[in-house]
Image (cartoon, one colour):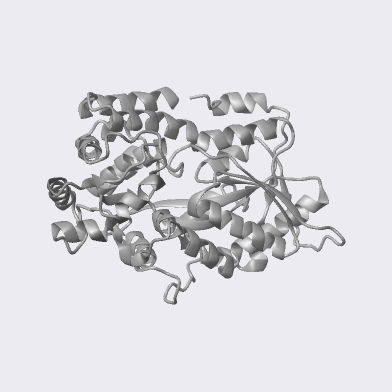
Amino acid sequence: MSFLSRRGFLAGTATAVVANGAVAPRVLADIKPRVTVISQWSAGSDGTAISAFGKLFEQNGGIWQHNPVPGFTTEMMNKLRAQIMSGDPPAASQLKGPEIAAWSKVAPTNNLDSLVADADYEKFVAPDLAKLHKPFGHWIALPLQLYRINTLFASKKAMDKVGATKLPTTWAEFNALSEKMKAAGIIPLANGGIRWDDGMKWEIALNGISPAAYRKAVMELDAATLMGPEVLAAFEQTRKLADGMNPNIAAQNWGVQVAPFIRGEMGMVLMGGWAQGNIINGGFTLDDFMSGPAPQDNGKAAYIMNADAFIFWKQKAEDLQAGQQLMAKLIMQASTQKMYSQITGSIPVRTDADLSGPGWSEGQRNSAASLKAAVAANQVMLSLAHNMAQPNQISAAMIDVLTEFVHNRDLAPKKAQQRLADAIDSER
């Protein structure tokens, strides 16, 4: 892994002055707003959505300059680091979770408090989510959309072929359905084989076995829990998932499996809500699949959250300052979040969003309802594979172990568990 450690990054950017320069919501007269943006989104529903946002920005008088960096989060962060170290950070960049706080220490960020106050936005953002975007008391980043990571999609044709009429609710039911699909010549689980995809399988398994163990092991890195029975059980369940995948798949985006999934050649997908956007973007319809929460053995709603956001970097050029103001205002608008989520399959960050009308799927409505229920049950978790639970270098070290486990059937669950604990210790 080539990602520079945070300590090395701080040393390499010692000349950066940390500041919270407020972006006043004033009108910059005679200035055409412009933004330079870095994100991972270049293809699929994510690419379609960010392009739609760019068009909206242009329709509101701005100049949109988006520089996507496809791949794992590390590649995008390497690009961001290079620009910061050269003194040329983008006006905004995709960032999430604890990385928002960490990266705000190495380059000046904008204080968005006045813009947020003018939009009365904070009251519509879940408190725990707001904390991530105002890590030191001031808003420096804005969340745009939410996903439930632990979502299960099932091919209607595959389900019909094995006589299944409802989604499995426990891992025992899931494993039994997988065996039926295997017997019918169906590959039970579609999987692309890229790192975050592999990592998600394990986190979905662990959360479905014990959300409490997930919180302790993944979010708190508790050593005893990491070597405990629930984490071992998650590796054992992940091995069952891996045994139900196409063995010939390696290093491909899961989206290449959309067509065979809809045809019923592959039975199920464990994926965040963006899978819906990718399926619809592939020319298929909501009638082609079923979706709902992934198996949850304790019977209560549990929600692994992934929230996409943009952090705003301090700029000297007035056109970029004006562009940041415009971009921030658009992100916070209910209409923008509706447009974005209906493309990607996410749900809006705004808790006042109305998902009852046309354009929303039952899966999205289910996701929104599940989030509320999980909040009540204290079972809202942050995603490991999508850099919500831990800083990037710890996430990357853990996913190195998880993706090797998925693709190396000679690596025993107990040994993989020890490797995971060792990888975390090396990055603490």
